[in-house]
Image (cartoon, rainbow, N blue to C red; front, side, top):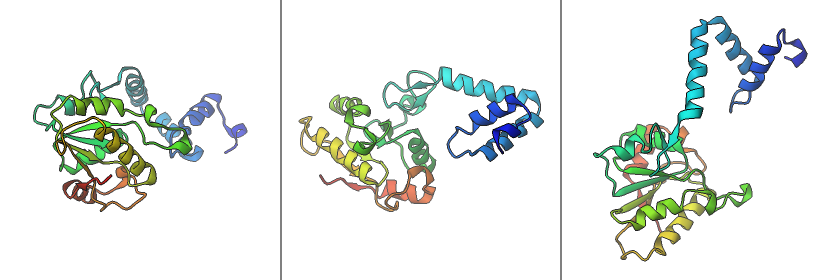
Length: 209
């Protein structure tokens, strides 16, 4: 539909804004907006309110950088989780993907991306220093690198492993491991089925520098 064909500027603006969401084209955006118009106004208000509160009130865990409602996320605050095992992931979606397997009872560290010179992302753009601080403080027995099996993911694994080695910790005190490559190279964790991802967690292997 051309912009000139919209019967309302309000409709046009709503479609244009909705179409900015990832994976949503203008036709899909139009269907969504018209769907909201057909529903009771309270549903649209509830959606708008939840999005506004998400944007204005959401916090990030001051320990692992996962999304949280307060200073600590529910996983870090859970006394039943094994704080000696840290699973390093790229983003919040990956935390949710690993949690869905039910195979991991440790804690996480969300980097917020991976090292990618082509995209202008370097180590200083990621939450690497806070990870090193957690490890240096002691009590960590294993670091699992659960980054996507791509060149960028492997580069980030290697960089962080070298930084950990430079901390001067007793040899063998912290085990470094990566997910077993049951996950296809180039795949995203959030699109990997739960059985494959769960098996990869269980059968993780030592990371070799």
